[in-house]
Image 1 (cartoon, protein in one colour):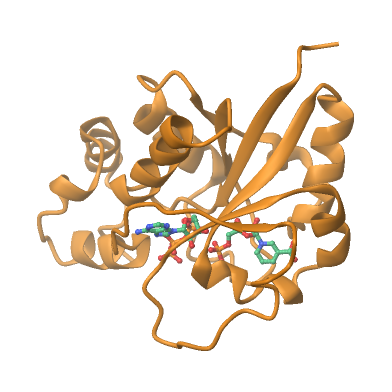
Image 2: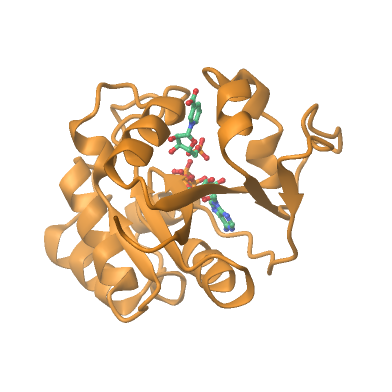
Length: 198
Ligand SMILES: Nc1ncnc2c1ncn2[C@@H]1O[C@H](COP(=O)(O)OP(=O)(O)OP(=O)(O)O)[C@@H](O)[C@H]1O
Ligand SMILES: O=C(O)c1ccc[n+]([C@@H]2O[C@H](COP(=O)([O-])O)[C@@H](O)[C@H]2O)c1
């Protein structure tokens, strides 16, 4: 069995991955007790429509490009072969079976914590995994019903309000988004002509 490793799972559609995602992942890699951070590319978030998404392997390639120089941060395609839509509870069970020596924790923003009580079997998730929550600016001030749960840990981290949706919209109308993306991610988007039509 592998030596005990504490792994933070940062789930997302990453359409595309931007520097806001990477700054958060790097913050956890450098300023927490987590040994590794895995960016888990979700083929189909149960709460989102799939039709606006780039194919999974392109989103994975962009995460690979954005993280390849960062030793503790890795892309994960673990959900690609699991049933869709991807329920996180199923992915966690699968990961725990595949990597029995690792302890898996979830990393999520305060905005996502507000919806966690609507996720499939969220009680099971919280029984078995810690959730590290970083701050986000939210239009709704109401707290999450789970904010005082003993498995939920609030962690300080930089707040960088960049969104993939805004990046896609800007690319569509020809605006410059290069400061918001890793140069190798922009290179791929540009070469492949992603997000310009549609
Ligand atoms: N600027 C940001 N800073 C910190 N966390 C972010 C930022 N943008 C998104 N996230 C979080 O990162 C995770 C992955 O993001 P994901 O790609 O699924 O959504 P998104 O960036 O909000 O994309 P979209 O705009 O396409 O809905 C989610 O938990 C999301 O809340
Ligand atoms: O398991 C669930 O019921 C569930 C419901 C909504 C979202 N999720 C996960 O949360 C991740 C981040 O959500 P989002 O909406 O910020 O993209 C997403 O990639 C999904 O894997 C999971």
